[in-house]
Image (cartoon, helix red, strand yellow):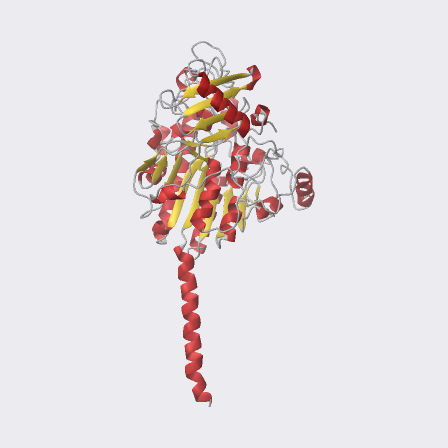
Length: 514
């Protein structure tokens, strides 16, 4: 009798192992996803976008071996950009994103951590049960999710928020004020304080601006500055990939780089003897270079584990270029026309790199910088690499918003739930299929007022302090030099009506404040 049981037990065991192996194989068929979110990286800082001084071969590799979106947009400032990214919503609605103030965790320790979090939470409305966030999309589709680096909500965030947003694991800062320094005495890991031995500055050794002999001396006084934050994040990211190579993961890397104030452990060899650059410019260029090196480390780690072809790498930025290397006689903040001495107002006197003497031309010849609704503030790089799925060196002129990434992630991961989003998935564009739907327009707020860009390349921007609206045709005028509202009144009215509708009936909903 007992002998007759052995074949049955063996058969059951074989079937169990078969099901288990099939489950693992089906899971591994899902592509891993890595989203690298650069901070204040002007589109003109990349070699693929025309940068002449700083070489960025690893970031360029993503574009060269994948798809480059030539008409990608994001918000003009970090906090609304991150909120749009993780909610899939634009920032001109009547019910605005709730943006918390920064600096809440400057004096945080284990004794007051709960009190700090409670104080932040009191200022925020709980997320509705039906709202789905970026990490949550992947999490509910069976992915392990992780975030490393800068926080992803407001100017101060909480452990409760990050877990609600769908992160199984996170390591980084929880407020922007501390994230402006690169030598944190502590970071946060899944709600716990993680102390960093050798770092003693409560403000994370935030540097001073503009460049002066005093600020240079402070910056290079390395007392209490032993461990650079980006090195911590990279070590953790590479370890995460090592540890999760057998299951699908979504890794979100909102790096600090190259957001200032300028801080770098050493000047990169590429710039040490570059006589074109001042010392502070060499240091800033080294921050961009470190970002590119970090991208290279991630790509190499994927290849090491044979994950290269089954991992989608998305590279983009939160907003346009910002100057962190201001120096008397070189380039000035507040931003000043170095030929006339007049300050730029981004209305009658628009910022351009050549007038400001920005040697890097970080906005790629466009008007404006971060915080403006000009192209230099909201036009961002977007490259996606997926070997074998995305053709090499593909260029798409599809109009894309950062709030498209959430529905795109839903398509990639196979998420089957409902989404409330202003975004439209560009997944089919990635794999070469005909898209069923595209944007008629994208819309963003700014400190100047809202702006709208339509699929044909027409753009209307508001300058609400003067109650002025301007009309541009970007295919012929990417520098926004010729206002066409008088020449094309019907087009102007059409876009102004659409912009008002997008702002839920009030243009002031597109006037950013916090």
